[in-house]
Length: 108
Image (cartoon, rainbow, N blue to C red; front, side, top):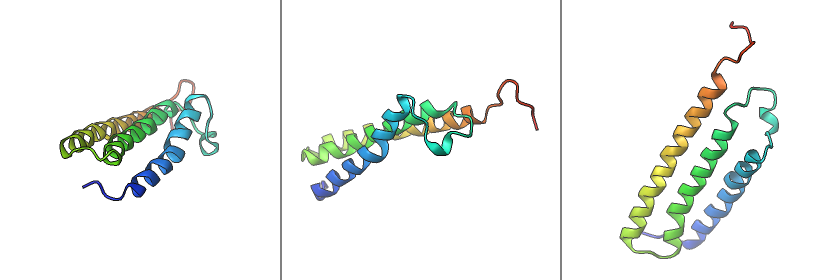
C-alpha cells in the first residue's frame, strides 16, 4: 500500500519547488513574467489553489512515509481529495475573475 518511500520523498521535493515556492512568491507580490501583460485579478486565488494542491500532496504522502495504518492512510487520502476539490474551485474562481470585464474597457 505504501510503496517505495523514495518516490514519496521525490514527489514532495518536486511539489515543494514547483507549487509551494511560486505560491508563496505570488502571495508576496511577484507576478510571473508570462502573466504581466494580461489582467491578473485571479492571481491570488491561483496561489491559494497551488497551496491547496501542495496540501493535498502532503496529506497523501506524509502518512505513507510514516508507515501509518490503512485507516489513517485512507482518511488522509480523503482529506487530500478535499484539498484537490478546493483547488479546482479556486482555479475556476481565478478564471472567472480574469475573464470579467473591467471598468473602462470597451466591449468587443
